[in-house]
Structure formats: C-alpha cells, structure tokens
Length: 254
Image (tube, rainbow, N blue to C red):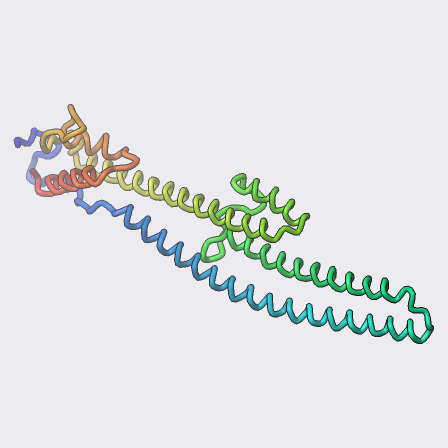
C-alpha cells in the first residue's frame, strides 16, 4: 500500500500521530451494571422481608391488646347487666363490642401495612444511594401507578398496592437502563469527536491507509474512520477492530 503525499506531513519533524486505544467493551459494562442492580434489589428485598416480619410481630402484639380490651369491656357489660337484672340487651351489647374490636384491629393492621408499602414505593424510585431515578409525584411514566395507588388505598386493597410497587420497580429499572444507554452514547460521541479533532490537527484527515472494508464501498479507511465510524450509534466489534487497526497504522506512519 502506497501512502499518498501530504504537504502537512512533510518535513523533518513529522506530525504527532494519535494514540490507538482499545474500544471500550460496552456490553460487558452493561452486563456488570445489571448484575450490580440485581444484587442490590435482592439485598433490598431481604431487608424488606426482615422489616415486614418485625411489623407483623408488632401487629400481633397490638391485636392481643385489642382482644384483652374487648374482653374487659364484655366483662363490664355482663357485670352491669347482672347487677341491674336487665339482661335482655346483653347479647346485642356483647356483639357490638366484639365487632368494634375486630374493626379496630383490621383498621390498625391496614394502616401499619400501608405505611410500610408507602415506604417501599418511595424507595422503589431511588437508586442504591437514595437518589431519585424518577419523580414519584411528577414522572409521566408513573402516572398510571399514581392513579391506581389512590384507588387501591381507598378500597384498602393490600394485594393491589403490592402489585403496583412491583410495577414501579420494573418502570424505574427500564428508565435506568435508558439513561445508561443515553450516557453511553454521549460518551462514545465525545470520544469520536475528540479523536477526529486530533486527526485533523495532525493533518491526516484525508490520509489513505488502505482499501475500503466490507460494507463501506467507496470509502478509504481514513474517510470511513473520520466520517462514518465517528458517527456510528452502535458500532459492531468489527467496526472497533477496524478503527484500532487504522490507529495502529497511523501510529506506525504507514
């Protein structure tokens, strides 16, 4: 292969050639990030499980207190009835006391569980360091979740609330992956632009280092490297290898 003459490269002091760098393995980085996210989610689930067990114990103790209170009220009602001799209304009074006790326990149990689920929902939109990934109250991706959450709370539907938390996790993870891909593309674009600027400063923008490769008919290597590779959104391993080869050829002054 014959190097074309380039006035800007002639002279006793050749222009500095850009360093050839290995292309970042974006797929491996993405897989590693997914692994870390999965581990963090598993750890968070374990912590939630332990917290849920503690809440259940506290709820059971509260229920015991409610039952003891109901028994005391029933005893007082029976003492009053037998003391006065008026026992006709005693069955209804005892039924009312029992119903009130059951309702009080159910309401307290729901409020305790709802508080825990609300905290899970708040954490679901954050990363491992507590930074918000999506705005729980404003993000359009969570509009359906917000509407259904209000309806489930009104009907005290614990199962539906838990399902909405799982849906929120999926939505947030998808947003996180999209943000990662956008950041990755931005970094790649900046790296390509910087490489192109270094080549142009070195005066090798139009240097032909070899024949065009497959899929780039009509383009010599340098044209492909400066104009095509620099603007690829999803370069293939073959593209990376070709770019590295060109960089090495430039470094060797071929």
